[in-house]
Length: 443
Image (cartoon, rainbow, N blue to C red):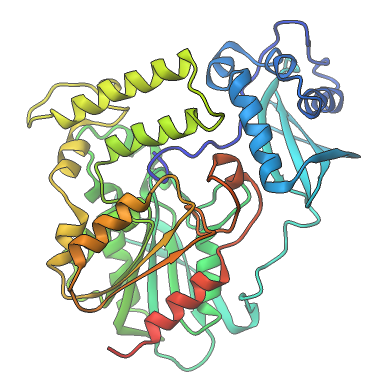
């Protein structure tokens, strides 16, 4: 899982069937242009005919149409390919970037082809000329970055410490990722929300530590664990990161905060309970409801983005509902396989079933800042309401919502959808300002 559910990383895996045969493997530019041509002309069936059976199942015609139309909702209407292309080779794949003009900006449509010349991947990225743009709140001359190691032994993790220039000691924040094998920037498509946060906060005098998640750095070893829980996935490394900051020159050991996003926000109270010396929590889009139920809700929302749910989508939703019910009914000693439990070991669900984030937060002495994007379809207003209800009347808790922001705390319009995660953006400046003001506030 990533950000509670794998965000649709706009991709297609390929094959060759039907009337729209791909160009030969020796001509990746022609294949890429043909595929983009099908999309731009709304010939979704022809585009799907260039995929293999696996991806036809994952990205059928209706989903591809939804994806392309959602992209245009974010960027305005497709105008034309500019005629610019560039190619590269990565292992056994040929890659072609087709530069396309939309109403509001240019995009690189990255088409990946396998050795047989079939489309093996599709990504929407900011056009290369635009990809280096930084948000206005980043002032790179005001901080330095250093590579660090979080934790030790077999689970040590590579990380980056972003330290303001000057005497210090500075307040500091540890960034804790959402679900899935996230890198230290929490990269999603062309977006890097954790880098935005690190650079934005460090520009304002706050040190930030971010690191690659254990499920990324030690992916195979983690996948082999049958007793995996969020302690191993998230909590232990966050606590180790806080400990590293306490021993870092230039950091105020009494002013170290944990900022958790999505799953990280849900688990922030659990992290603070494990280390009572943490000064406070910043919770961005922290879920409060059982994740198995949220997954079903998210899939239903995505299936209904086009206004209807077809038979295949309904079948998938019913399967998830059955697995969610199995998660709810789990008892210690269960022999159910991950395949029966949304791909996750029973130990993981049993651990989460026993945890309630708002109830844990009520028991904590730390101050808290809870932020919510009102266009977030992954962690919704129902989750925010649970935080507000549980923490009503408890001092030192601040709530702030942002009407135009999504799950990544980036701006947009209309209903939230996965396509917008593939459009280059940045964490909104008002989010940076809110965190900076809260950290600097005297209680």
